[in-house]
Length: 190
Image 1 (spheres, rainbow, N blue to C red):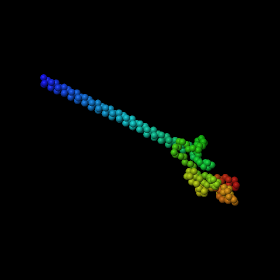
Image 2: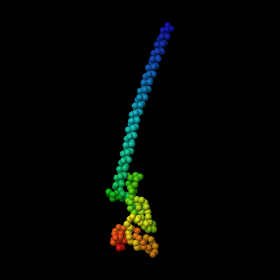
Image 3: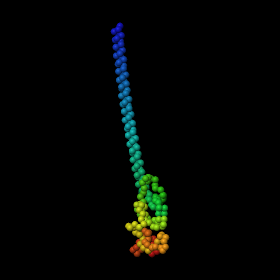
Image 4: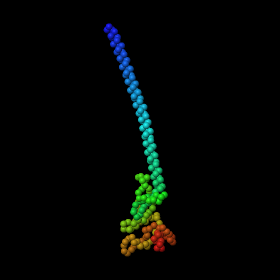
């Protein structure tokens, strides 16, 4: 009887050990399958993330190119002028002729370059000075490379002194008379 019990015990032990080995191998298989599914999910997620990143970069590039093209269109459509009365810049739409004080919003932080020209302005004491809106240069003396009025003995009523001084005309020349260039006012006096 003792031998029968030992044999049954050994068989039962072997059966339990076999069941435990089967359960352990099945658990290992499930763990491997879970890891494989996680790797597949991660690769799908990575590919979705990559596609999403590519679409974001493409969208940003398209925005940048569209803004650049819009700025070019604004540069072609608008011109920046200087108002000598208000001493401020204004923008003119060359196609419609409309003017506005504010810069077109489409330009963003960029600005339209002003015309490279010299303008005759007057200060608070009515003294003439010359201003270039593009380079922001100011000068009491006329620019050397521009045609100035040749009238040398013009009475300067802008000096507000007595006796009234005479000197060169501060205006730009607009017409020619007998080989000399004069401004409109001096041309009428001639």
